Length: 156
Image (cartoon, rainbow, N blue to C red; front, side, top):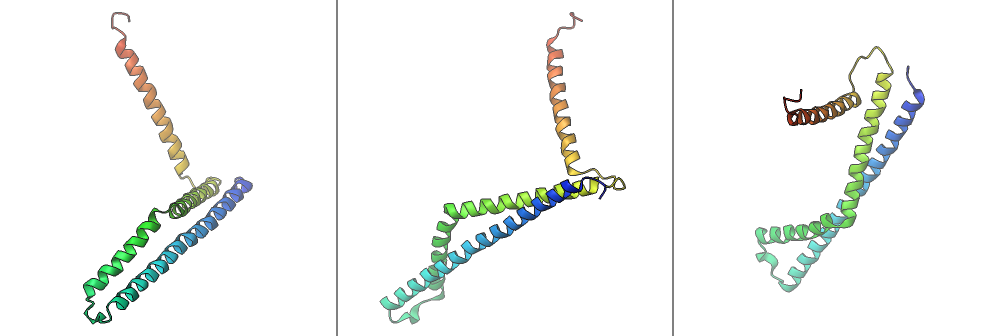
């Protein structure tokens, strides 16, 4: 490494921490779905047992009726799950960890690659800085154009 090894190491460790946070978030996210699936199937089984108890001749249970009960049970439970605060919080944490992981990985690789003078690339940070500066200059030009329009030609 030609540049700042401490900075690259710090960025790498931040990226690693956020990657592990992302993995924990994925586990929590899929655990919620798994428990939701178990709960929905449990409710479906209870509904089918209730249907069998009220109608001993379940031979007339058609596939359409079975499917309707099955889908209604899944929809009922998963609608509640997807609207729950716990699910939204878990999903937000997962997305936040994912964005952090991407940011720290990008910062690490930029730091590592910019340290090598043999790699003459333009990196994302430089492009973002360029666009920000260009936007500021456009604003200044617009302000100056408005000022010059308001000045009468006789004054000059």
